[in-house]
Length: 127
Image (tube, rainbow, N blue to C red; front, side, top):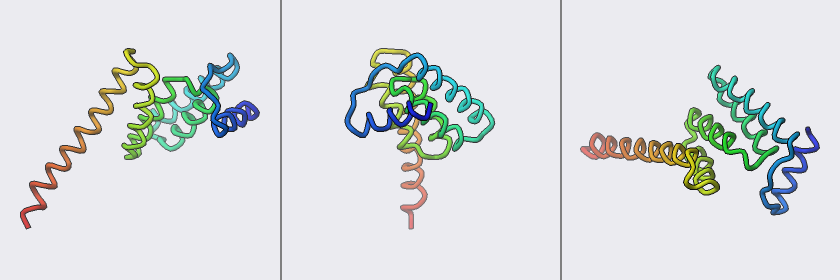
């Protein structure tokens, strides 16, 4: 497994194109997703993030890993990073249900930012 992770890292560093993971790599990625979901459900968002990132290193085409990583980042208050990963889903799989969910999550983040901005304008510009 470590060898596959290292191979994946060097492939990306050298500009390698995304390719489908082998069955073993995908199975390992699924195991990390499962562990990540358990950590996420327990409120351990940093640990969940680590598992989701490992899943992506093993299978860079795994949409669920992008989605779950975005959620873990969002829960940590790292909204711009979350948007980056959700946008990858939209770019890689336009027209899919996963892309629609990602678009909704992105829209929610920007809506929240607008609401905060309006509150600041209303309450802090009166000085």
